[in-house]
Length: 111
Length: 275
Image 1 (cartoon, rainbow over the protein chains, first blue to last red):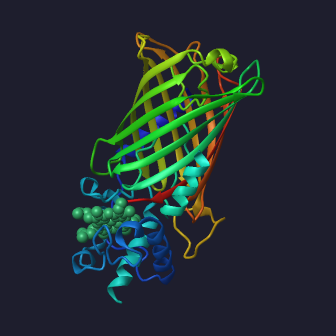
Image 2: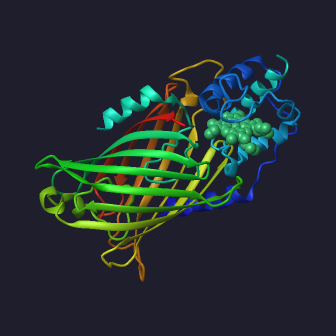
């Protein structure tokens, strides 16, 4: 029972401390992060957005409308998803992996 | 039949991968991605304080109906070290995410209809005055009791710095008229590594998630109590492979005299995108 109470306290503490989103991708311009992001993209995103992110059941992520979003806005969109419109929330992926995904998405801009 | 379905899924679906939570009893707020089907086989070995051990297995089909609604069908079976094996029933579960944005604590409403018999030993939740004696009863006799139940859960869960912390409040009612039986599950989990490696890998730390769960019964509506209830502490690990397969293991120890001595839960699942 003590562990149950401890977990509840932890849940409340987690709830009270909300983390600010960094203004810039901490993994920006790191080639190994782009590679890691490409791997994560194939695992989690390609089924809907296409293997090269150029769109499939869901829109292309190479479009200027996506590429022009600032880092924190893109991070927040991927974290929350758009549940009513079919884009899942990816909050269960650690922050580090969501930033790696963004490093990969940015690399598509320069193709 | 499970094997057949798994083969069919492998042949028709593209593998998809989530960061699989290692929990067996506890639920977090992560929903199945829309259009994804996950098929899992989860055997659980129960050792009662007295009497033969029993092995129960459930086959689960979980589908992401929408990004905020996940549906599952379970088919359960059981066997004991002595006596026959039996099909022990089915359960139909739906989970609805209540808030459309990610918050520090995210509520999910869970409702399940179960048509099982008294030999169902999957122990997906512990409620009321559940006891090791339920597991020691011979399957031949237990399976003649029918149990039509509705079960509801309020799932609260949040993620921060790679940690998940979750708590579930459980209320289950036998439709034949018994009072609501109450229970809980709480726990936490974290992947061994937060960032991903730049290459495909099987044994790297990012593929392993460790968890700690505690679950148990809380008596009945009108008689909320800890006495004569069972409680378990479980460690769990999930290993997600790049091909969409996840393996999970969770040994649990009974903490009270009413509890089973132990459970050992296993899980193998495959997830694919079918829509």
